[in-house]
Image (tube, rainbow, N blue to C red):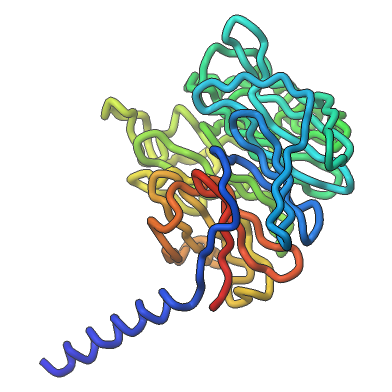
Length: 353
């Protein structure tokens, strides 16, 4: 039995070593934060779902509010959602109030001002829908293009209708104009001009890899069927023909996990972990993680690391769990590579001991 004691010792030592490899500290309290973006190596802009934008000065720990002119309907999962800074411009996604309890996933832009942001819409998902569910609403910039995830608002098969925006990934230029090589102008004549891919449910993670320059997303399934995968032009992830391995909340079957003719995800989770934000890590603080996907979760309250260099043999590791509550967003510091999280009630910093 000596060999069993040795294995047990090595296991305990390994867990202990992992547990002391990094530390996580709370930077400041926030009220239901949703999105975050670095505007310098010392400042973060953060959205709160209720409609506030906060400026965080990391070195001093100062927090100030930035006023804005957005017409937000906070309803269910809707509110002020993602925020992204690019070349002196701030982009936000939000649930826009259209009256009579109807709202849309909308995107606006403003020139950077640390005191007041004057936004103009550059995209409004059509049609407005009376629902507080599934806005999606993560943003990512690749070259001169803005990608955004538009949730299907709980309407299921609307994600298979490319004449409506809900349930799709859109691609527009940074000024809101439409790229002439979007699918509508190439091989999908019946698609709306902004749509790049269809068949998603509630994608709350979207990022561009600094390594292969591809766009990746994470998506909430129903009762099971979360996934991480690549965004592919003119393709279809299959919701609600496919169930990605999950079922309806009532327990009834949705459809197969995957079948030919639809985009196949890189990684599926059954049961659901409630994937939220993602990033492809690049930095010095955890340089051994370079090129791997970091996936945060809400229900599972975890940070997961995916080595997907071989997409047929994805290796997954839970970095931590149940330490900061539900995790909504993740950002990697642009200089030192330390990792910042939005938990359910604040901003957290993860760094090596």
